[in-house]
Length: 322
Ligand code: AVJ
Image (cartoon, rainbow, N blue to C red):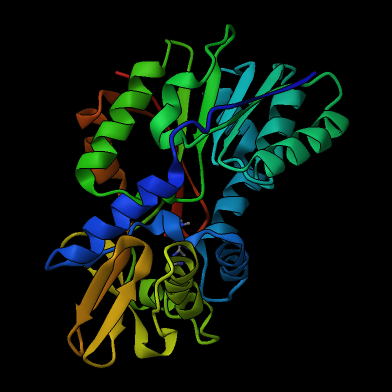
């Protein structure tokens, strides 16, 4: 009942080296948020999701708990759930249960970068959902979307957690257009998006009083120290996260506290920082229903369902191929 295909071809170490060289060589320094998530970074993110100030995970779960059966019905009671970035599939169970209760559930396709987690999750789920067929894919779904198997009986392709918010508008449009191209008439995208709200709540969510987000942000420097033999002093940088209301996104950086030079031995690179100079490490876009309708239209998609929590802090939306 379980198959797992692994597609981790290209040398991810070389890709990282190239990304980091480009990111730290220009006048505006930047590192991609995917580099946060080594083992420590993933643990810190788990801790973030439990912080009182960080509402997105809780409200997304609330929507799934309260409205999964409506979502499944609105998606046409499909036979397959594909989940991009499935991890331990904690939230997925609400959708799977709703599909089982609607008697449409046949196949779950978890797509994740971690082979270990994908296997573990698959083993647990076949026990919890007797008869469930699991076809796992281990890959970087940003690059290997096209590897996702097509299925009869319709699919929900779920991309939860608000991770779409990490993409800049143009790569986001390209990613959604590639998803749109995969959708058959009976398939629906299910996308999790954090919504625009007042600055104070947004900024609190990314500047928690326990300092976990600061530690999470600085962890990317530990990743570079280990993977590229760099010598970043984590205490020489401070966490900065503020809301850019014009662009409707959180802007998350690390600010150098002093003039300093950092050596990245593996890249044979010396990076200079002036006091106050920043490295952007993440954006986290916030959405409105209107904005998302536009974003969908620009990617060849159409809004087909809108589900929010009671406080309208977060949305799960369904989209179809236009
Ligand atoms: C995992 C990308 C959804 O943008 O809120 C949390 C990551 N960064 N706190 C987000 C994050 C700092 C999170 N996403």
